[in-house]
Length: 342
Image 1 (cartoon, helix red, strand yellow):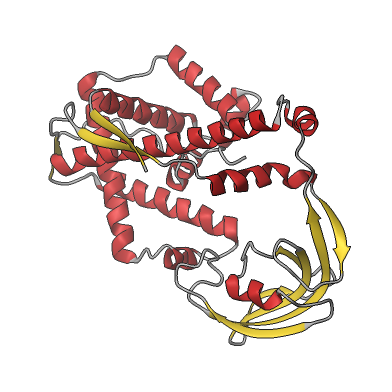
Image 2 (spheres, rainbow, N blue to C red; image 1 turned 90 degrees about the vertical axis):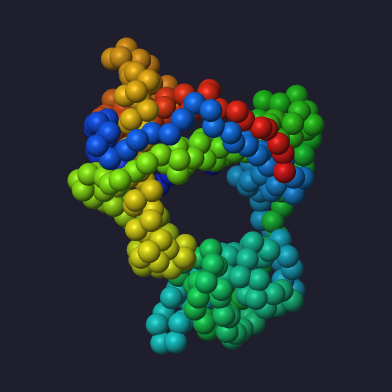
């Protein structure tokens, strides 16, 4: 699901997996806190566009689509099975030339707009050879910043048939009384997601204001090392997810060594200031409160039991995460927040 662990960064997830808890020490040797109870910030919530709603609606209907064979020519929205070989010089980047080939929906631009445009108008049996130069920020880390040569053969073309949206269909499949009610529900889900993202950005801004306004003269080397390891593990999990190298992820995100070092330091400072605010304000979790947090978190992230959750995540690190969230709650409660839309 879209929302699973949405509120957690890859760094936070890596920390929970690695068992890097216990950052509630006294950092007063290094930090003099600023006034953190009178901060001003803005909560900017992005409006849900009609285009976003339409795309989200299609996502919900994907499992109900059917396919009908077509002869061509290829047009946008069709599913095309191809034999595809992508090379960076002599290096093979993608090889989908086996019997199964590769299926792609024209218009989704998985390999960029140039590849989709080259396929449009083609028929079964057509052979395409083309070269594409990708920008450094292209979403596929295997392709970004490279000059790729493609050899493509069109094998099969299918029309994608979405179900007719009727009141009966949405009632049977989604438990809604009408198409209008169903679309209202989808819009509310997206609005909730936008609100959560805006709130996360606003809370991060409050924490950054405390970092920027406080006097920080240093940090414990062990804490800095821990944050380096957590952040690297986060990026490694991203690389593993997309089947690329860590260096390719850094390149895609434009994270040179200087930028990475800044992130290590920022995360170290964040840990220190949140721990000091907790200490100063007496923010803590009793055993009973911790259990309640674990149960709620397990349910939110679709674990059957707390035991199943703790099989994947370290309890001390989860406690540290919950305490950080409580500390951000405190900053939010004491801040002057202006709400706006964009």
